[in-house]
Image (cartoon, rainbow, N blue to C red; front, side):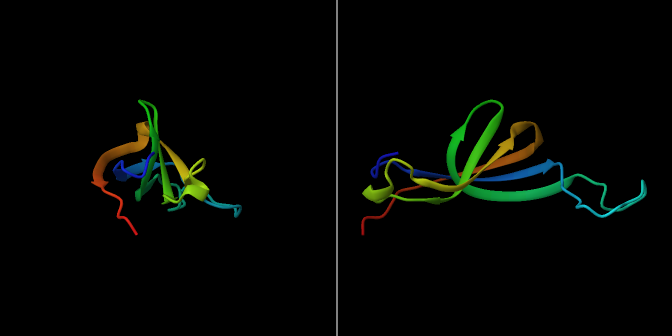
Length: 92
């Protein structure tokens, strides 16, 4: 992404698996549910199967080869709604 391009911000509403932990549980445990979440980030990549969001995007030249940090991939099969926003980077 070049400095003159807009930055795509995406928020997703999703439902997916959740890690309960290493404690023992029984079949009636309230923890046995799908997690419902809301996540936001800078769009790294998207295709028909998945979307990848990053918490940080660097516009400086020193990070231009790898501008994204702390990225997560979400399967589209669990996404209920996608909210999109485009921002123009400011010049400092």
